[in-house]
Structures are given as C-alpha cells and as structure tokens.
Image 1 (cartoon, protein in one colour):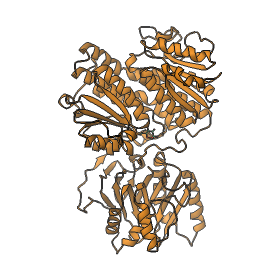
Image 2 (cartoon, helix red, strand yellow; image 1 turned 60 degrees about the vertical axis):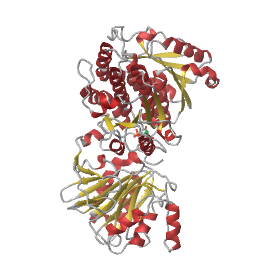
Image 3 (cartoon, helix red, strand yellow; image 1 turned 90 degrees about the vertical axis):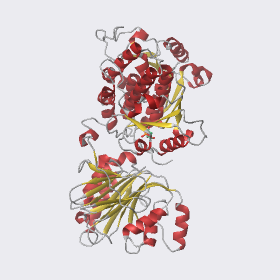
Image 4 (tube, protein in one colour; image 1 turned 90 degrees about the horizontal axis):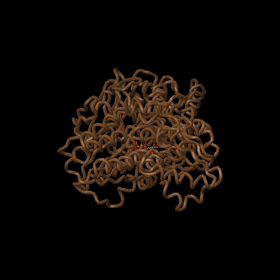
Length: 639
Ligand code: G6P
C-alpha cells in the first residue's frame, strides 16, 4: 500500500511530486508528505488527511520560510508519499517521509517491515530517537547508523537488515541530485527522462513526463541522478534493464468529463470489453489460441481449477468457477487468496491455479500464487496491469485490457475479468470436447457482441439512479439471486458497501428462508437478480416471500423472463422500451427493472452494470467520497 514518488532533475521538484502524488492517491490517502532539498537545506512537510492539506501547508510553509527557512521553490530533488496506515494511526507524525536523528537521511516507504520492533529496540538502545509509531522510521535510522560516506552502500546494508515487503526511496542532502530506491515485494517504477529521472509506485504518476520506464524487479536497487539511472541486483551486481515503453495515454487515466473516476470507468466498459475480447475471438466466434496461456498442450495437463483472488476479483472468480464447470465440465473452486494460503490446500501438478487481480500487486493474491506454485500447480494470471508482480510471477498470463482503473471500487476490471474467464471456459470446453463446435461458436459470437449489450445496460442509468435514491435512505439492503445471479449479487453487495457504507448482504435466493428472512421488515430494500431462464421461476417465488413480509423488491431481469416491455425474444428492443426501464406491471412492493437480453451464460457482465450504477448513485445521494471510500485503498500490498 501507499504511493511513492521521487524526482531528480532541473525542474522545480515540488510540483512534480505533488502532481505524481495526486495520481497515486488511490493507493492510500490518509496522509501525505514530501521532503525536498533546496541545495542548502531539506524542507520536510507532512500532513494527516488528503493531499490538499499538504498542499495548503506547503504553500504556508514556503511563504513563512521567507529568507530563513528552506526554500521549497528552489528544490530540484525530492521524494513524496501518500499513505494508507498500517503501523500507527494516520497523523502528521506518522506520515512519511521519515528522517534520522540528524536530518541527513529521508525515507518514504511502501509495505511492512516485519522485524521493525527488534530493529527499533536495538537502535533506541544505541541512542536513536524515534518520533513516530511507524515501522518505516527504523529505515532512516538504520541508514544513519551504517553510513560511512557512501549512501548507496549504506542503503544496501540497511535494507539487507529488513524483513518484510518494501519499496523505499531515500534522499540525502549529503548527496545532492541523487535518489536511491530499493524494491522488495512492493512495486516501484523508474521513469526515464532527458536530463531528469523519476520514481513512482505506479505508471500514472509518470505519464505526464515520460513513457520510458524501468520496472524494478525483486531485490533491485536503483540509483537515480539527473543524467543516469543505475540498477543493481541484491548482490550489488549491475543489471542491464530493458526499457518498458508505456503505450496508454495520460488522458486515459483522467476523469474525462465525468464527476468521478468510478462513473467514467463504468461507462468505459464497452470499450474495455472490446479491447479484451476482440483480439481473442474471430468474427465466427472461435477463440484464437495464439496466446501462450491458451496453448492446448499446456492446458491438457490440468484436471481441476482453483480461482484465487481478493475482493472484486474474487467475485469474478465465482463467475469463472460456474462457467468452467458448466462449459468445460472441469471441477473448479473459487477461493479467497487470504484463506487459501493458510489452509494447506490440496493442490498438485494437475491443478491449474487461475490468479485474478486488477493491480497484479495484491499481497494476499501474490502469496496464494506462490503457495499454488510451490505445490506444483500451473499458474495462469488474469491481470490488468502489464508488468505487475503477479503478471511476472505467473507461468502464463491472460491480460484484461481494461486500461488504467483509478477508482478504488473496481468496475471495468471486473467485467473484463469475467470476459476473460468466460473465454477460458469456452476454450477449455472445446479442448475437452464438452462443448460442441457449433454451440461454442454461437457463444463465442455472443461474447464478441457483449460490449453492445453492456452499452444497452448503460442506457438505463437514469432509471437505476431513481432506484438508488430510494435505496440510499436505508441502512441495510439485500441482494438475492441463484446460480450466476448469486455470483453477481455478491459483487453488487460489495460495491454498495464499499462506497455508500450501506450495510448490504448477498444471499442465494433459496437460502433466504433459512434465516435471513427474519431481517426483512416493511420497506427493507431487496435487490433480486433473475437472468437465468432455468432458475427465474424459483427466484420469483423467493421474491414473493420477501414481498409477503413487506420487503421492497427491485427485480432486475430481462423482459423475456418477466413478460414486460423491453426487448422482444428476437433481441430487438420493443417500441418505447429502453433498457433497465420499468418492465412488467409492477405488483405492490415489486419494481421491475429490465435488463438487456443476452445469452444467460453471459448475463453477469450485463447484470453487473446496473448494480455498479446503483452503488454509485446511492453513494452520491449520501454525499460519500465515491472514488476514495473511507479506510480502503485500491491496491493492497500488505497482508
Ligand atoms: C482491494 C480493492 C478492491 C479489489 C481488491 C483486489 O481490496 O479495494 O477493490 O477488488 O483489492 O485487488 P486486485 O488489484 O488484486 O484485483
């Protein structure tokens, strides 16, 4: 967790650092800080709260500094940090950068130093004074204690004493125009400029300045000066890095006219799905098998599948499990990565571990990947961020081409994960002979057409907004469904909880009567999903059970299953019937919202759209900070 930035070069460093931090706030935003060197002195400034508080403090400090204090405007070297607290509450003292006793070594850190207690005791016994409760603060003091005139050597020696995960950047006024950075389990990217160089936890912070990057590998150390970047491995041997050129645009990571990144990303789903699917399917609906990850010889080895992930990616895994079993008739389990790693899982050479992650950096997911690999499983990563840790540690990768996802609540990454897993299930179904060729082609063509279906789902946003305003006044909500609808319900409840802070639960519709029905009182909002023809009648019975207890049901279903207006059976929109419009004659206590028609096996990617919009508009109605929900962060690189 946390975001790191660094700069060395001819520009004023502060604006570069603050701009970079603003693009990394998704990694944590409970405090922020910078340390810059003005050629004479270090200006270190840090504040609890959002970046705007740091900016205000800096403006004040620079003015107040006047002729006496360090002059931030002259600074050409600096480091910055945006924090998501692990050790020590969010506060000015615990915010980074942290310094040593003498103010000669300044450090920003992302990750956790597991042995910080013993190091702190040891250093304190030798007279070092600590000002914060963080694990990070041991690093500048260690460097101080090991420094003998060579910063690179001291940083190397200090990091060799650390256990845990970290990305660190170090600045020292004794070595002007120099930054030293080390990566161990937490991401770090070097941005290569001309006569200037940059450092960041993630690419969006660099795009304004350069597209040429070095992605640091485990244990590597980079030494940045304006004209050079030298990278060495753990043993200090020089590493010849390959330049990784970023192809996506800075504007792709901007809001583009939408009020929030989340809304923008919800609306980007048709494009994201096209990017993910079109290159992998022929117009006839056949899976192009050129990617290594789809190699029939490799896939033939596996007898079962484990889908491992956290949060939203796990919910995509639930859809994947269902489709792998249904289309490829291969036993599949979806499991939370944080549970998998500690339960001595029954995984062997015959197992395909499908590791799903938007960021490719989630610590729990990475650990599950390693656990699976150590037990001999084949590892296939479904990842969005190119060059991320999970992408590099996996044996093979299927990228979701969703583009940068900034909002903490994941949306387009989910639909693209579902699309990739559907494609994998389809492909395995053909390879294993469980899916007849014509049937597979038909499904493949429908999959190719999914972006248009999602577009139609988006056209019903206004109706969903009305529903959201009604849900927003409640403190509890329920989501019910069966089969694939239950999988989507789980993602729907997470979305609502994450950003609107409404307590929400997903329940298999048939299980409601075994306990949860006790919680339904007059007016309780219950969102029912019914996209599966073979199950919809059963779900409708459960809807009746809710209605009979006074619950208020919002039923999301295609017109073909409710008999209301919308699309006819041929898939054409019926006159006047917009998507997600009020459908069948609403019975008292039941409002029907019509979903677009689509092959039921592909329904999750369409049904999730109004669920995302519901959460979004409910959060907006409640005045919540949609893109930066409290206590959460986008990329969780700690256990
Ligand atoms: C965090 C985010 C979630 C995300 C999960 C997994 O908890 O807040 O939105 O689903 O991590 O992230 P990943 O990058 O591995 O998909």
